[in-house]
Length: 79
Picture 1: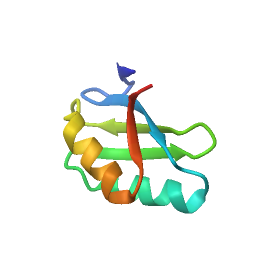
Picture 2: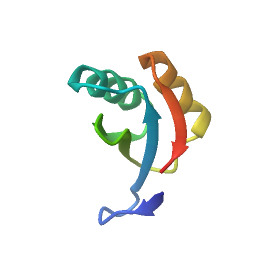
Picture 3: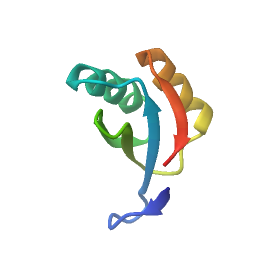
Picture 4: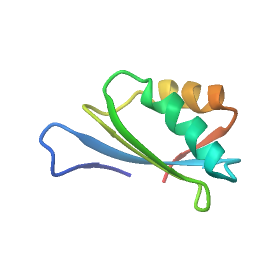
């Protein structure tokens, strides 16, 4: 899901990530995704496998996939 948020010029996208099981997992994924240029916030929820990313513009999925891989998890796709 990609949607415009209340903040002008920002995009919110929800991704599904498999393998997260705890707060440390959430932190690892959030840290890697936060390093992508243009990302302003990341919220990962291990119990649902959902990661909500707010960015200045739509992100290239290959960059998101690489960041999630670097954290040790698998990007399933957009929720």
